[in-house]
Image (cartoon, rainbow, N blue to C red):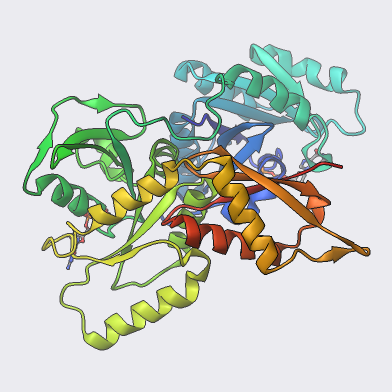
Amino acid sequence: MKPVIALVGRPNVGKSTLFNQITRSRDALVANFSGLTRDRKYGAARHDDVSFIVIDTGGISGEEEGIDAAMAQQSLLAIDEADEVLFLVDARAGLTPADQHIAHHLRRTGKVAHLVVNKTDGLDAEQAAAEFHQLGMSSSFHIAAAHNRGIRAMLDVLVANWREPETGDAAPESQGGVRIGIIGRPNVGKSTLVNRLLGEERVIVFDLPGTTRDSIEIPYERHSKPYTLIDTAGVRRRKSVKETVEKFSIVKTLQAITDANVIVMVLDAREGLVDQDLHLIGYALDAGRALIIAVNKWDGMEPEDRQKVKEQLKRRLTFLDYAPVHQISALHGTGVGDLYASIDQCYASSMAKWSTNQLTQLLQDATAQHQPPLVQGRRIKLRYAHQGGSNPPIIVVHGNQTSSVPDIYKRYLENIFRKVLKVVGTPIRFEFKSGE
Ligand code: GDP
Ligand code: GDP
């Protein structure tokens, strides 16, 4: 599971500046689910080979009323969701009562928390940090977020603690069969779909509560084939006040994406594709997961509205034209059984193994059909290919001047490989290695 880090501190200490630095290369993937997670922003981040999730929060001042109280509440929920907390303070402003209030709260939660003394630019960092020692935090870092100073060193230390041996980004090799993550915005019909998938004829649900922290796993068999549903909708959750308020959780969704082999992304046909859907799709693709689009609530829709939705999806999901799209009604069960054909196919594609011979032959056919371009008078040479991983499939291409392969040529290769190898639903990652 990806570690989850929450940034907390008073307003203005530099939390969003740090958030932006940490998630910089991934700005497009930052999801801000307004209305649901007011003042909480989630970003996918990576340092060296370790991916993690960062939550930015509005801030806690300790004296909140009205809207500030709601904001502080969000910070507290973010702390709850996190594995570790980065507690930011402002070296220029010095220690304030609000900082002490936050430190006190953090001690009570028992979470792993690190003090981060920000805005140390132009100051003697040691000296500036000295007065914060009385907060009694066990570890501390000095940074200048706005100048990107000290952040790398800080992440080096944090990441060293989380590093898991050699699992990388890949989802776990399937125990319990195909691991299916059901994701989507609130109210699109995830719970209804989960119940429908499990309620189907010839499904045997095992009564193992395979409960992990952030997602609930439901192992079952269908036609004697094992599957595990990773349920982000909280179908099987015990009721508690907080869980009903926070039924939808981005962190749960991101964890489900990490843990799954295949993602079923549920859309609400009556609302069409909205920005939040695209954020979630972006997360799934970024994680390299095979994806199926389930357009739910297809029942009772007028033909012209159906046509509109189909056209919108086609237009806005051109980058995803390899993903199967299903129109379903989770409520009535229409089309739900057909999802399994796609799930099985996507799984097979994402786990497929190809020989170096096969991939190299394919590469040579592709380059013979359509040569790579010349770069400064010399032709790019692509010599052989081998597989570098699965879920998602990684194809490593060796040659000369490979750093100059233009995107359009990469897309050409991807299309050919996808077609010939019959790869459905999953992204394919190409890595180019140069012999020079
Ligand atoms: P937040 O409210 O905690 O999210 O704080 P922001 O990230 O919005 O930062 C508040 C202000 O502090 C902004 O004007 C930032 O430019 C400034 N700031 C952030 N980091 C640094 C830093 O490292 N040095 C200095 N001098 N200013 C900073
Ligand atoms: P979740 O928040 O994504 O888990 O969504 P729910 O499964 O709780 O469904 C939200 C609402 O949409 C409920 O009122 C469902 O009855 C309704 N709903 C779910 N699937 C369908 C469907 O296929 N057709 C129609 N008409 N309503 C649906």
